[in-house]
Every structure is written in C-alpha cells, then in structure tokens.
Amino acid sequence: MKTNIFNFGRMGLLFQRYFIERFRSEAIYWGIMVLVFMFMRNNIPAMFGLILVAGAFYAARFFREIHYPSNGVAYFMIPATQLEKLTVAIIMTTLYYFVMMMFVYILGNLLGTFLNNMLAGIDLLHNDLKPTFFHQSTLAWKLFEETGEPGNPMKHFVKNMPYMVSIFRSFLFFQPLFLFGSIYFKKNQAFKTFAAIILVFIVLSILTGIEAKLILGETTITSVGAPELWQNLLGNTAKIIYYLLTPFFWVVSYFRLTEKQV
Image (cartoon, rainbow, N blue to C red; front, top):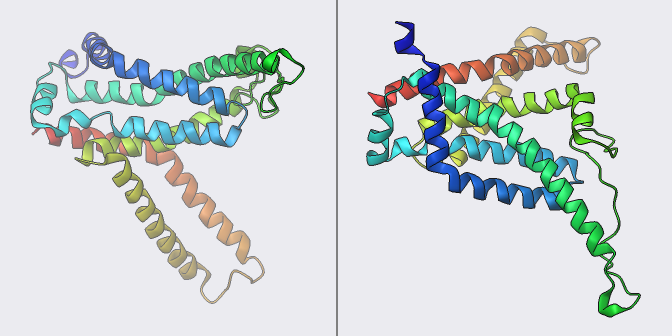
C-alpha cells in the first residue's frame, strides 16, 4: 500500500523527466546566473536579493504547465502520485535551486575576478594607459562570509555554515508561498503571489495592532513597560509565522494540486 502512495523509483523518473524536458532552459538559466554573479560578486545585498527574487520566480513558474489544457492533461496522466510530484517540486525549488545558486556564484566569482584582473592589466593602444574601470581585485567569497576574505570557497562555506544556514532559512521562508502560487494562479503567478503576500502582510499588521491595543488597553506604547510588551508580542507572532508558514504551504499545495487534478 505504501508503494502506491510514495515510491522513490517513480520520483527518480520524475527528476529524469524534468531535466530531459527542461535541459535547454535550465542550461540557459544557469548560464545567465553565472554572468549576473560575475558582475555583482562583491555586492552582498544584491546577491542576497537575487537569490530570493530569482528563486521566487523559479518556484512560481514550476507548475505552469498544469494551467494549459493539453500540457495539464499530460502532466496529470504521469503515473506518479501527487505527493511524489509535490516532493520533487519542493526539492527542485529549494534544495536543488539553492545548491545551484551557490555553484554558479562560485563559478561567476572565479570567472569575474579572473577577467577583471586580466582586463586591468591590458595596456590600451600599446602604451601606459590602462582601463580606469578595471582594477586589480583579490578573489573573495563575500556571499559565504561577511568579511569576504580570500581563500578556498568550500573552506569558507563550511567555516561559516551558521551564516549560510541563515541565508537558506530566509530563502526557504518565501519558496513555499510562490510554489503554492504556481499551483493556485493560472497566469502571472509570481506577480499575483507577491501581491497576495503584501495584502496578507497588511492585514496581519492591522490585526496585530488591534491585538496589541486590546492587550495594552489604555496603556500606550510610550508608557513604561509597554515597548517591551509590544516587542514581545510582535516577536512571538513573527516566530510562529516563520516556523509554521513553510510546512503549512507545502500541505496546502498538496491539497490544491490534488484538487487541480480533479
């Protein structure tokens, strides 16, 4: 009975199908990411934002084929359970995507630094003039370590594992939302999911303010002890949302995907 619900062999075939059908688009996508990291390899906020934004679009487009009649019928006729299909989607949009981002960052950083230093040493018109927009730079791994010290990338990755885990946790916070959006919305999944997140955030902010007002009563946030109570309330609410949001949207995505099949 368990074999009919979840089978690793069928999951392996789903992975195989994914890469066979999307090999060209995946190669182009990661090639572009290498070029992007070549130019922004020393900008931590830009790289961090790229991982989150690009990852959101990647997840939001994962189930786009189910919204087209011909492709959708073919997808749901694949001899695999919805749990297996969703598990593959989760792995592809979280673990696979994050690991690939780290890989293309390493490659882009190496190529970018090499080309930069090579161009910085080229004379223009065979004289002493040198390009003013290229300067010799040391190979650094700023995404793996805030100080961006040079050295072996894997050494920095392992040494600063807690820092990398924090990046992955932030990344994991948004992925399930956009994966659910790729199942729920028929068109413009990324934009509609982002708009829904903003709307829910506004509603939660209002509800949290009302809750705080009810708890504080006549006490204002300027009263003695009120700021600490306010901060604890917001902090506890944020922690609950942070830890429960990811598994919640994975579960909701499963039921939505099953409902979509029907």
